Image 1 (tube, rainbow, N blue to C red):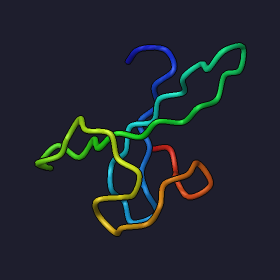
Image 2: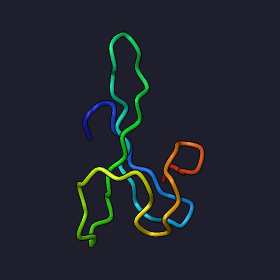
Image 3: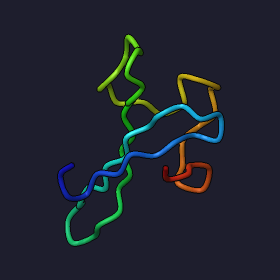
Length: 64
């Protein structure tokens, strides 16, 4: 997996891919992508979990 990417799981156990992007001199812009293997939107950028609808943020995601 490329540097700056992490596979995470929502609290509902849905697979999410998170990328940390650099913006200017700051690092930390979080971009989330659908990473569920059987999903029609796999690989697309998302703002909420396709599994449960919650808005995404690192505070609600778990590494696995």
